[in-house]
Image (cartoon, rainbow, N blue to C red):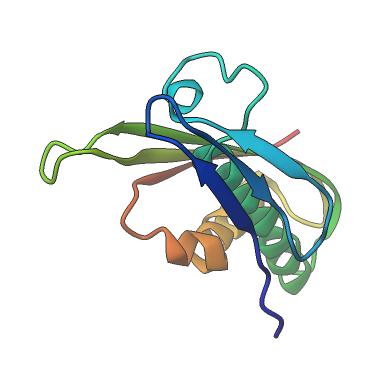
Length: 146
C-alpha cells in the first residue's frame, strides 16, 4: 500500500506565526494555517489540523461504510458523511487535545433496512483505519437512512 505525504512550512512564533500545509502526494493544493485562527470560532480562510483530520475521517469512514454495506448485501446509492473534530484544553497534560469527533452519516442504500444500516455504520466506525488511529479520542456516531 502507498504512503501519502503532506508538508508544513512554518515561520514565527505560535501566536504571531503562520504556515502553509502542502498536500504533497496529490498536489491538489497548499493551504494557510495559523494558531490564532485555529483557536477562533471563524477560521478566516485558513485550515487547521482538526479540519484536515475531519476531512480524512469522513472520507475514510465513507469508504469503509460503502465496503461493509456491500458485504452485507446492500448497495450504496449515496452517503453524506460529516466529521466534526473538536479541540479543547488538555487538563491532564497541559496544552490542547482533540476532545471529540462526531461522525454523522445519512445514506441512501438499497438492500438494507434502517437497523442494518446503523449496524453497518457502527462496524465502519470501528473498522475505519482513521478511527483506529484516533482511538484516544471519543468518537460518536449518528447514522440513519435518508
